[in-house]
Image (cartoon, rainbow, N blue to C red; front, side, top):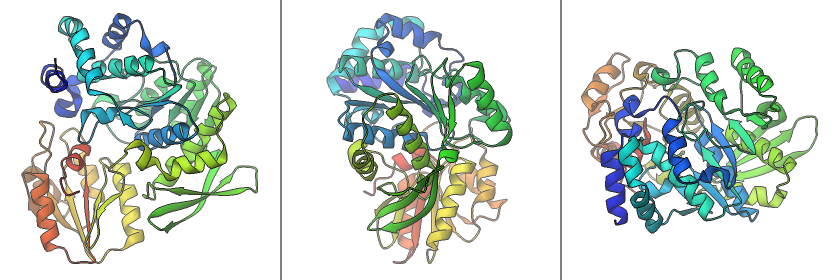
Length: 430
């Protein structure tokens, strides 16, 4: 079996959430456990950090991985979904998983796949665990797919559990209130394993505190320990001034991830790194700063306020829910482009009206769709947007919408492509 045959088999045979949505989501961990039992439980063969949350878990995962590999640790990184290449999901020290491992893994486990019919995600989780064990990583950063309690990754016993935040997303699966969503995310909290929560207030904070108490797990809230007190742009970097609680000491961090929302992810990352230091990981200030300054370069993260062209500026961002879009709007208010063009595509199972209600009426829109079954057709998106006085044209393919935006934009305008990981992943202008 070649690599391409293996990928074609996985994508055509197994239910894939990114393509079909809720129908691919399994409501228990049975398949993942059986797959890993077959592989002699590779998840027990390496140390890990487990990361859940509504927004920011991808950026936080990549930041942590970049710092750890800068500090000399052989670092695995499992994230999802991918933008362009399946192998983006599984990396060691920034290098994507080898073709021959993917093909060999699929060939060896194919009989079990035919027997138990796992999802695409369940299978790729088992693949990542096996790869990290075989390659003897020192530590792996493991990002949940969605939720936490029933997520396929939730069979690991990490050094630290991390929950970035809670927001409105995947309500059709995780629950119709923020408290219900928080309960699902809190499912990654393990017995006596420290947990870092990026930010939480009120009833959401109470959910985490009570779950941590139940599991006898030490809990810390990152935004109560570290504070981003100032930031500025310098030489295509985001420079953030951080103060640590109960200390007059201030430090500056240069990030190559330049979205303003990264200040929150930085706070979560710094708090998690502090907890890792308490666990015996040697992480010096210079290594932390260098790792954060080179996250994109070292781990291959894309699609987070990523400027791929100037004059007019073209920015890609995978923001796709209310909280993510709100953060983008804050960024836009700070930049104040001459004219704003938004190329946007959403998926059917998102709260489309909530997202559309946030978008600025003054922008010119290019409503589009990714080439997946879950995509909301561009014409339907345009019709829904008209109720919120958002004006624009519909395009059945992302790049045709982007080309139209480029044609209409002047030198000092900004073109933002957002609404879905899959929309960003299909952009070819790079």
